[in-house]
Length: 180
Image (cartoon, rainbow, N blue to C red):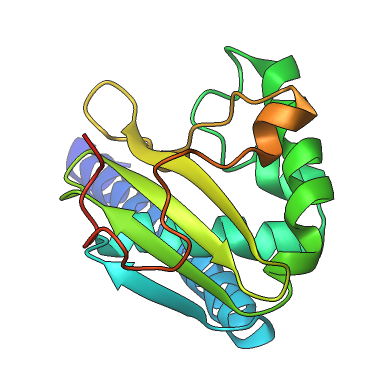
């Protein structure tokens, strides 16, 4: 085989590899979108107040869905710092499911505070149970490359189910601006 034929063969092999990688990447993205669409269809719609970004809304919806499903590992997978505080994340996920599973299966409204370019405070209202829950969603990674995640550091059950003093009793009470 000539050097020219080998070079052509290597170029073709490289192109096939690039195309295969692109196909696998597209399949993974399609699989994620299919899972999101299935979750969306299988859960109660989330009411929204304030100004979420598409990404902060998506992670909030996923958290509510995982709470409704009652799956600890699903809630843990959304954590901002899963490795740094593994025990705290596990306990927080269990506490949140214990406290909000019933409410997450009913009508829920999420209120997004502030502008949300890198983080947003979210207050969730569980209408059927009358409960509220506040948490922070934020970009993770050095430059946000790891996407949006939920801060979960409430290993104490009382802390996990506590309501902050400034949270209004109904969505929109503060005009979606953080209390100062």
